[in-house]
Image (cartoon, rainbow, N blue to C red):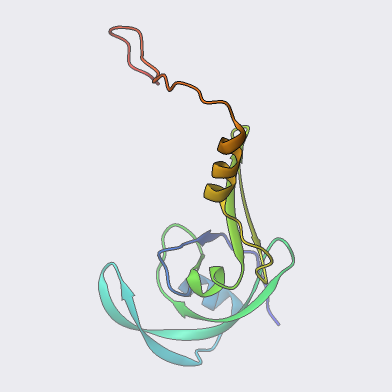
Amino acid sequence: MNARHCKGVWDTGATGVVITPAVVSDLGLQPVGMTRSHTANGITTVPTYYVSLGLPNTLLLDVEATCQNVTSCEVLIGMEVINQGDFSVTNVGGKTTMTFRRPSCDTIDYVKDAQSQNKHAAPTAYKPHRSPKGKRPH
C-alpha cells in the first residue's frame, strides 16, 4: 500500500472527498469508476478512486474520492466524511483548533451552552466599541 502526507482542507461546501491528479500519480492509483461532479465551473465527468484517509488522531477512513484540480490543497474533505462524526472549531486565546472524532459521541451545542451560562450571569449593558474621532480601528 502506498502512502503519503497530503495537505487537506475541511470543506463543508463539498459533498465528497476530492484528490488532485498529483496525489493519484504519486500513489499510482487506478480508477474504479466515473461519476458526474458538480463544481463552480459546471458539471463534469471525473474518475473515482478508493483511498484511505489517515487523520492526525490516527482515525482511518476508507472512501471513494473523485480526482479534480484543486489549487488550495491536495485533498478536499467534504460532508461525506464530516457527517460521520463530530467536527468542531474553537478559538481560545487567539489559537484556532479544529478537531474531529468518529463516531459521533455527543451533541455539541454552543448555543444551548451559551443560553445556560447566560441564565446564571448578571445582566450587563452592551457598550459598542467606538474609535477615537478620526481614527479607524485596526
